[in-house]
Amino acid sequence: MARIPYADLSHPDVSPLVDQIIAERGSVLHLYQMLLQSPPVARGWLNHLTGIRHNTSLAGNVREMVIMRIAVLNGAPYEADQHAPIALKEGMTQAQLDDLDAWAASSLFSPLERAVLAYTDAMTRDVQVPDAVFNEVRQHFDARQLVELTATIATYNMVSRFLEALQIHSHDERS
Image 1 (cartoon, rainbow, N blue to C red):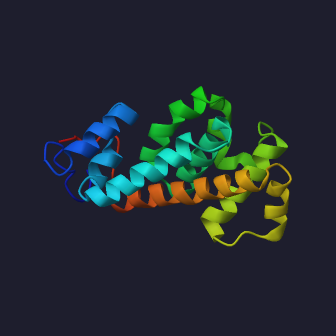
Image 2: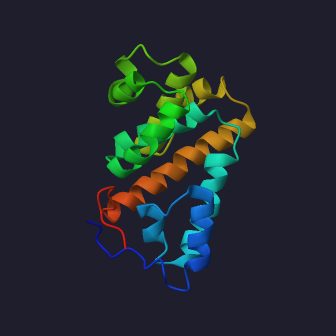
């Protein structure tokens, strides 16, 4: 159970955002129900994540592979629960999802995917990215895509840290 209560979705301060979230996402997931404790934060988060998820030039399978690897590294089961079906829909295989915890020893990832996973690992674990790791990922992406990839990794580290600090889980009851 989450460490603090989820927001009351019927409160007048959050109603417009609830309507926007439902229109864009189909429902108010636990993440947004918690974020709605602060409508300004929820609004900014929604706009930012919409940009990352829907308005970048990254391939969907690359984006979702990054998100799933971050969920593994940060021990964020809610993030994994939400994104595994999306990752499969975007072209990752179940075998790739299963191998994400030990991707370096797996033969299931292309050179591009391996470069992205190494970059994700460096940004998530160490913050500073070694030149060799950056130079490898740079071979596969132009400047715009490198910015989008980096922003995606940074954003989903933020998401998993928020989820885990407040202990938001898929099985929690919603208001």
